[in-house]
Image (cartoon, rainbow, N blue to C red):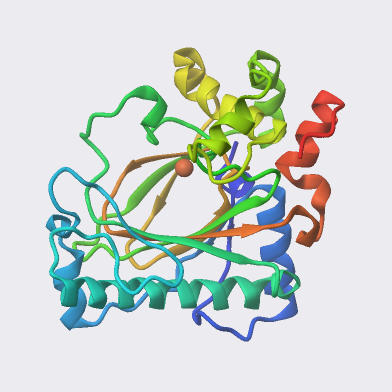
Length: 295
Ligand SMILES: [Fe+2]
């Protein structure tokens, strides 16, 4: 795979546009086709008085990430006092607002359908850490989360690299979703009958898992745990330079984050029917492969 198979690079320099119809069409088509849309000219401004909050120590202890839930006044940076936590939360909320304006400006059809989810700040270097294979996002994977059933909804993420030392964020991007799903879907075991209800009732999941969620979690795990696949699967290296913003449907784009620090990340959820071409969603692809209704 060449870089142009996995990336669509657009000349965008303003978070809120306005964007030309040509840029909008290219962004929408690339995203829904499973490419990463890269915006090398779109930097997220951090005020000089905010730069102390970019230090890896703000996460506190062994923690790697800081989270801000939509509507929350403070983030969960345990090393900060409440006033500092509010200021970092304000920075993260500003990124969330910028990201929402960007997505709605690039793809006006999503306006009114995007659900703002969590904002994350990842201040700590990825390379050199130890993870179990299932939790190691340096391995190629699609995003699927055990506690958050999506029931077919899309996961759209906006990232920006705010590293002060100029460090790039290095990814690998893998093969198209359908090829990956055709390899691994037959290996995924069905859920134990009644388990989705039990997990939901016990509060282990936020809502009940559907067959779609079981399949997506199975795809996530099977790919990450397959050493031969990780070694031999097609992958394209991509370096996101400091000052670059990029976005993709991470439930569709096979990705691995190998190194880098100081990334901000905004997650949105999107109903499949709000897509311009819902047939390209993992839900519809998996329904075609299995011949079953999965949501
Ligand atoms: Fe991921």
